[in-house]
Length: 255
Image (cartoon, rainbow, N blue to C red; front, side, top):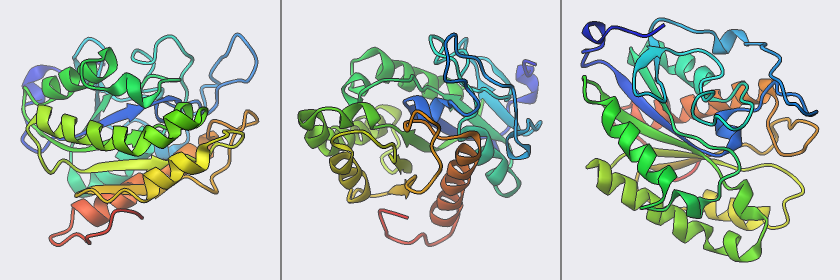
């Protein structure tokens, strides 16, 4: 249901950008066989709530429902991701939550470089999200599996991620924008350790990393299960509330 603009001009709207690849857009509950289908199971932690909105592909606010990336990662079958469990975990503390889904599955970080379609669309959607009020609170980033397939890409990951962070903060005019990234945990990726090391060792102001290692994967050994997506959303929420909703957040770059 689309929300009338008259009801959305609230200074308390807390906006979170969701970006990356398939584990952010969500494959929880999506079948392994083609044609892929979503089982439609929405855990209690991911249920819709009037205080959780999402920006549609057409740049309109509506009540958020799973799968929240269905019209963004539209060439793939989307299921449960971490966005809704994150939003439900933070809403009582922060108030009205606005999710800005920007994720596209199977994308490498070079496709998120300034000037590329994915990056420019993310920036456009982020800017649009604050036109009727509210504040961008953080960028949630879950990506890196595609960069763990080739050594050259894996070794370039840290520099590319640092450039992305610098560019998005500059283009949004938010030099201290919090970035919470998820360290990948898929198996069978030849250079995953290099990418994970880049994610976990990054020392950039207001950049925090949560670790997906230990969360259950689906049979494809690549995507998180529905339950694990709920847990990843809670991890992201815990870090956001601990680091960025406190008067004196700790000066760490991982969690």
